[in-house]
Length: 356
Image (cartoon, rainbow, N blue to C red; front, side, top):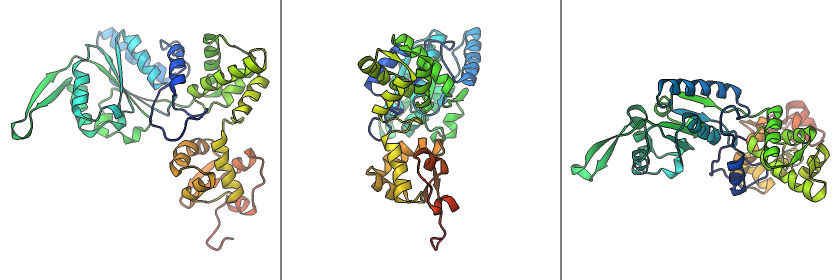
């Protein structure tokens, strides 16, 4: 039950997509853990964050600014709410794309209460003027508000109450060093192991009043791409299938049958993922092939293939990005039950200049 909710990922919604739709957001509000003890997974992050928050409470001070990075759906928003709850403080939620001008940020900062937690999602997408204002706000709890224009403009210093900024990003490398250095605690969220996802699924099933057997939870966890948000979404779809097609109890067979209907295979690949692999293997002999050519063969936009399908295929070791193009790995041939071509067997699909 650990999620975050970026809203800018490309491509259409998918059952195994990590972007939260409206249904996800409504369900997640009920399933989110309320404290660190209830939060599943991310053991190192939890331990370190617990020390930071306990120390701040012991000093009677606001907690250090926190930066959370990692893929969508791993728990960044949930941890920000837990930080506020553990500190007994209110939380205000906004996002980088929503702050396009320094004045937007000044309005938010000037209305904060002492000790309040400000959660800034997709912080790397904030405008540059707002980002520069945030430097001073984080370090000195002060902002300069510009009044007037041109030569007659004056800067009025505005003191801010101490607050805790929790920044979340899916692309930590895009954060400028001056901003990154102002966070007192930085944590990277890792993908979940199947055993951790099974615990997530059992907890969610209990809260949703769904009866699920251990093997059913294991089947769903194995197809969830290491992401709690996806695990919970798959659980809801399997629940629907079990209620309509069976007696409402989720077993391994029921979970497998339900996810077959939704075209999510045993490794968590969906129609788009398999379409990319099948085109790469069947049409191009395993590659190498250029991204644009591969996208045309699949019938999708280049950005959809590159940003929606490829990251998981690369992480699973089914596809490799090389200077000459995309190349299928032996695991991809095995997963689709195909026999590698002679070229793929000889050099993983990378032929020399003469095609030998």
